Image 1 (tube, rainbow, N blue to C red):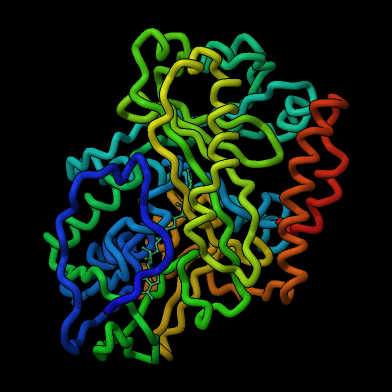
Image 2 (cartoon, rainbow, N blue to C red):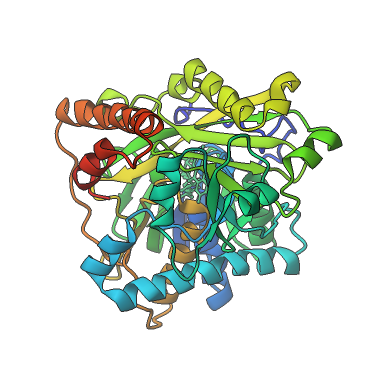
Length: 447
Ligand SMILES: Cc1cc2nc3c(=O)[nH]c(=O)nc-3n(C[C@H](O)[C@H](O)[C@H](O)COP(=O)(O)OP(=O)(O)OC[C@H]3O[C@@H](n4cnc5c(N)ncnc54)[C@H](O)[C@@H]3O)c2cc1C
């Protein structure tokens, strides 16, 4: 019997509609490219490779089903965010690399929209921008420091006009973000890929990766190149101590009545988040619900994935309370969905595209919570490299991934970091000034 990896996709996006069952691999075979994982990274890799070389024989092996992982469960923000901070990218890779990255991410948001429109994918894409709003003086002071060419400061009236949040004191807006339905994107991509000849195998777990060969459900698959696109679900033997799973949890309301939608405003479907130190994120979905997520679930010793982390009652209830605090009119509204999933965090918050043409192995990932657009860009860049094209010197290319501290130091440090972040938000509410605690932990977490 096959053993599936931990977790179930219980998301609003996945819903309960039965999915088309795909075959699993039942014999040895040979392909030009073997892709491991059918999330955005794996699917977009196949998409871009087929665009560049239509005759390639590509197979995708997925241990569960297409969109099972973070790609089918996330907040649906296709943003231009990058996990490592701007100053660090500039310091380590130079300002040209930073500018190229920024430009490529911004273009990628539009490309996802264009590809979806051209192919008539119904993914509820709306490029309404993103708003970070403040509800106290400290938050406003902190986000005001982040203004640049792409981010505009909004005063209280302007911010409230965009999104009618209780106690809003102002915000920062960027036009570079789209809201979308991520599970629908995985399904649309998969159907498209099958139509152009990519073979997708579900319930097909890759057990070993060798040079020019992978072992799937006990069958040998030879290939010119394998691409590991398994992100937070990566088997620990492939990334020992190099990344940890951090859970992000979400809740979604029932469909909101038109009066409540009118009170909330935001007809352009800008994605939004409060400027807390502990991350929150939300969107009004294509079917008129509020979907809100956040981090804060305790990290598990030895980086274990856990069903219980996806269903943390305390955290889900806190998200519901936060939603009602933002929009008191939601008091009487039902929250219909609760779910969660892991994001992958490398020690230095570093995303990676590692490609070795000599061994015929590639691996992509490490997006933390910014993988919707970034996985598209990383997969596209990888396809261009495989195709022998020259690519810009983007900061994720061929990076050495550092190791996390051994346990239990890692466990203690990561969870202390969460606690400190909660304390930083409390400190800001009380003092009205940007948190001292946050400024002390920032260099330690090395973002
Ligand atoms: C709750 C939540 C909210 C988020 N919100 C956002 C957001 O709003 N915006 C944003 O940009 N990012 C967000 N993210 C992050 C984003 O979803 C991910 O970065 C992105 O989806 C990663 O895509 P992926 O294809 O690399 O990984 P995944 O989608 O996780 O896919 C990896 C796949 O590999 C499969 N796999 C693993 N091992 C094997 C194996 N041995 N054999 C075969 N298959 C295997 C897994 O089953 C899985 O399906 C969020 C994540 C979560 C969990």
